[in-house]
Amino acid sequence: MKKLVTKIMVGILCAGSATLGLATPSTQIWIPSTDIQPFNVWHLGLDNYVRSSGTGHFTAGQRDPNIYDAGLTVGILPFDSIKAEVGADYLVNGTAYDSKPFYFNAKVGVPEGTLYTNSAALNSPALAVGGFNFGTDSRKDSATRTDQNILYGEIGQTLPAFGAIPSLGRFSVGYYSGNKDVLRGTDGEAANTGILASWDRTMSEISDKLWFAVDYMGGGNFNSGVSFGASWAFSKNVSVILGYDMWDKPALAGANTVTLQLDVNFP
Image 1 (spheres, helix red, strand yellow):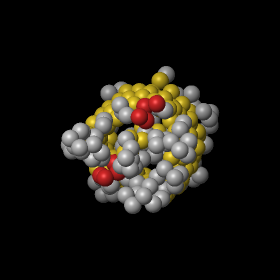
Image 2 (cartoon, rainbow, N blue to C red; image 1 turned 45 degrees about the horizontal axis):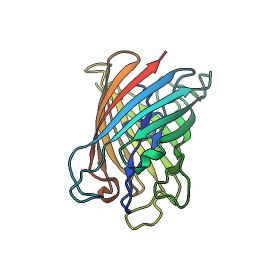
Image 3 (cartoon, rainbow, N blue to C red; image 1 turned 135 degrees about the vertical axis):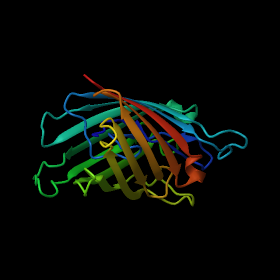
């Protein structure tokens, strides 16, 4: 399934602050994917991240805050061989970060099979470069800075049929680098770089409407973790994802989250 979604990636700062919002381009469950919105097709994403358990990561006796996001993304290039998208998100979580709730992202890339096709082997991989988590609070003296300014590159490849299995799915890998003044580890030192990796597959043996994915973001900051989930497409333009996020650094990111994401493309 070609996923065309816009999401907020949300982390938590533990150094005496609250939550930090993150805005991304077309994604898997959590990390950016090599998918890009078609030209002049708008995407509305409504994403919820609800804590599965746990209290007191930041304030004793209080549950870590949930996160709610509305994002809009559109494809801006009228070509088949190279595509681009831009997007913006509005995120709130009931904390001081709500004073600067807007985030921006952009991506450009080439789809699989653009550079060459080979029916007997692998087509050329998909390539994408972009940026996300461009927040609107860049004040150096601000306790709620949102300018993560993450830049990344990714390559994605769908593996062909293997025996009775029609496809092994798509494997993607990439690398990112962001603002070292904002992306930090549990020791307070810069943790602003890391790998991106994912697997996703349409489960055509069951239904072409069913899609599974697992993804990982490294780096040791509040974004780092493993996410997995499934999507069901109710129509060509409407789908819902149910997933689970296991954060690598609970002291930074808070308790794990259950995510429910509604994705709508129009026209």
